[in-house]
Length: 135
Image 1 (cartoon, rainbow, N blue to C red):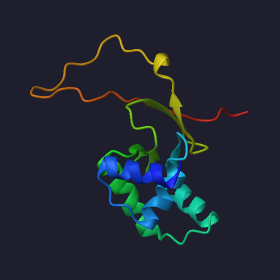
Image 2: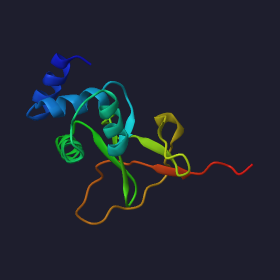
Image 3: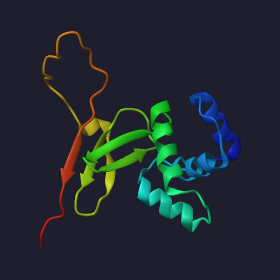
Image 4: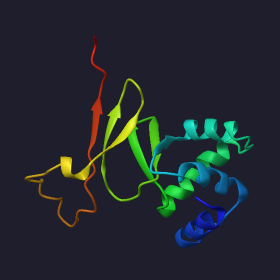
């Protein structure tokens, strides 16, 4: 993704561009992927970027708040940032820490529970946790 593409996306989502935010977005949005903040920090260091840990977390929260990325909570202390923003489903491997998409056509719902009074459905997103088989 070019700098012009990133600037256009930031404008579209109402995000003020800073050099640090552009560095973060360049890595996170280069392709459809799921990244934890820690993984992103490692990638930034590998690229020679001097972006602080706090700036990474603050930028990811901002990107999520504005809809540029989606947060996927896999457990109470681990969160991923997904560059695919449409609602979709995931597998999470608790042994490897890998998060992967489930193709939409592989998930089917026959019946859904009645919604609480006064609410409407926003989206349905399934997270299936898996473990590696013991050999």
